[in-house]
Image (spheres, rainbow, N blue to C red):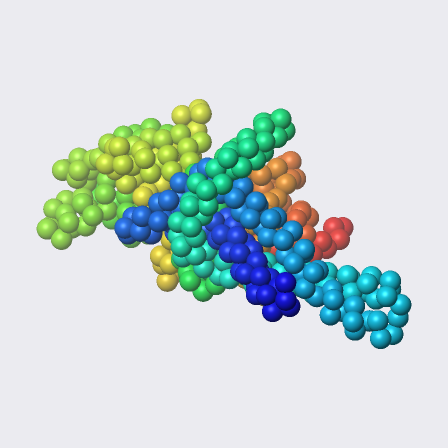
Length: 433
């Protein structure tokens, strides 16, 4: 075989090897969501690729048969094509035996380099750039090859399946998509500029609803504005002016005996129409939805939907009222600062690059996000910044108390009747006197 014929044959072998490399990487890198979208748009080839991904054994068997066969042939043809030329070159300076050894080594390096660049690196980088589009083009020819080499495919596939079973490994790829997968995709989209950072944060907040308890976003007991059932109109007006909310629980004697709630919109309409506001003179009293304090926000949303309500009273295991929550509270958790009121003081204020001022009732998830840390000690024992300090100190915190955790120093700045108002968080582990 002449040098020209050998070079043509090597080029064909490189092209064949590149085909198999491209077929392999495009199938492995193809995203099922994108393939499903293409199939729904009418591309039948995408549906075939999806089926191959579910049972890829025959496909990859053909790929490996092709790659290994081509590699062996390439080595044989390459050595025969380049060795004579290299022998003639090296015989000018060394003995025939040494020239043959050097010629073999050089032929090996040339053939390996050609196959490495043109049959491996280039097609695989090409396949990673647009795997779905290439996979749908490759699936037809690969199906023909699977049929052609069916006996060999069957033999090698059964041998591989037996090895997998022996090792106790799954034969099929797990295609379950978890919330972590979706969050990872949105984070990648935010880094790539496809999603705005705020949009990505909203998506992350939605997935947090399953893990955040209702107590992390409720209006706590000491902040609830409520009415006695026999309060005069002057008291109602004064309380509404002092503490404007969307709903007010109506109680009998104390806050733990809730009779229902009144909607601020109903009271506003009565004021506009000149009607009295006294609770015994026609103000609509709505039945209060009561939920336990161990529910997640997702479960509270389901309760709102089932009861067709947007206001709930939260009780603990002793049937004592610990707070109230509205649908707007839950949605504000999802939307974050996109819906924060302009006159509402934020719970987390960043003072500089290394310090934050944090309200004691701030949900711990918001604290972790602001400080960019994964977790704090004993994460299952508290829901708020104040709860974290109580768990760490094992007592009610006092002003100037400090806790060091996660590479940060947490110092209590203000306490009002055992309630932690402000906590100073500083990056670094300052010494505690």
